[in-house]
Length: 288
Length: 288
Image (cartoon, rainbow over all chains, first blue to last red; front, side):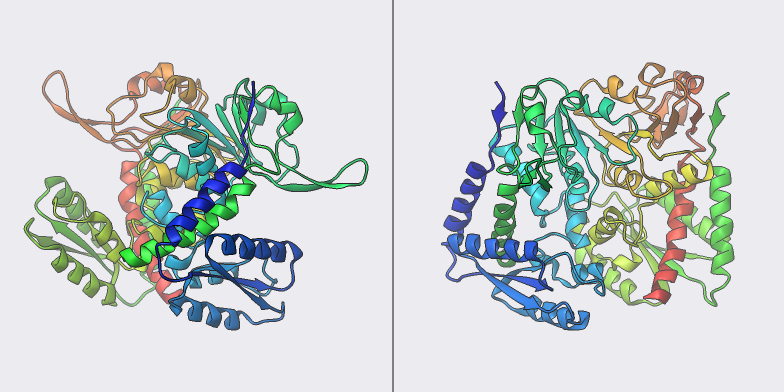
């Protein structure tokens, strides 16, 4: 019997944890999110953060800029937020207008407020198994692993995708020496030869390539665990819009022992993990 | 016919390159190496650096401390070296006496002078494919790959070992999107199940576990490329001391298409790559 790994109970648990722990501090922490241009997906994401933040006691402040704004104005704003004692997290939402240097903005954010974990020092600390922020999608995957007691020790995890925000950090996290690590990890990508041969050896398959329903039943081993990180918007035969993952859920369901749905799987936990980083930021501030 | 991949011609090429390029600058750059206690291996290593540095035009300055020295004295020295315009690289040689916090020392070194690439910001930049220093052993492996034109694109590389200085950085480097990357990479370690099954799928096997002659012919695929990063001192049956790698060279030689010997392989290139980081440091200073 296949177990469907839902994100909702995992997220609920995290939100409760954040709310309870934040209640111990005599202030309302702020998370600043800089939005440049008017990307509908980004605005939707920010609005959701505002709502979820309110629920747990975090004030999410949207800072809206026209796409014509100069990089130096944004850098000045980041410097100001870096110094603002009430701000515990700073996000510069992507995509950015063409005239921006994404890396310069990532570097400008104080690593102690870098809740998206885009700063190299946070990525480096993650690799070196030191304290710091972890990007929220890989953190959500680890949280699912923890919640559903998925054994990673000595298991072969195959990761499809080598992005800076999912594939690479996750590979580094899963080889760490801890209870959600100690896996044998293989990273596959667009250049991988005989991909199916590799994916068929996976005890745990993580798909993060952004290709709708790419993973089929023929590509997996019986009773493997499937963690689907992809979120792709497609148009169905009837012309309706819908979201699907990188895995063909219908076809892989029976063959797998555990599988995350899309929507309703890892994605539901990501925002919770991002907000949990605000709690981490507060703790780091008081421990510094 | 198996090809033996010698490190010497690779190192010679690098030394020539460093010397030629350094000759364009009107000064002699310094590399400071802090040695605490009197570890014979560390002193031997430092002395070799002095010698090799002299050959290419780098002044390697040994700073010797008694094992009783306080951490704050070392931190003060690092601060001084960080500000010294003549110093382009700072190394704190390991192992350190027990009362030292290794991570604190790594963090104290200016990332622009961190030629060992132990600072998290350099590790993070490496993962994110940004400019920065790369640890010298993984850099030496990449240099061997480049020199001997070993194809990595679409190949399956199996790395034995997940250390911060070799296994982890190398895994991140080999999945990068460049001419020494684009490999499908698997990281194995002490917790890996059915290790031989995994190593037998390797087109390129990198051994970095520090276990003398661990890899035997039964563990490898015919015609694979073997890169041996291990350096282990053993006592032979006749009581003599000798250095061997993590691979049983005699037994794996015939079956492999290319193999690095120990000594005389990767190890010979490591010091060259470290000194090349001084050149990189100079370039970064003038491009900052």
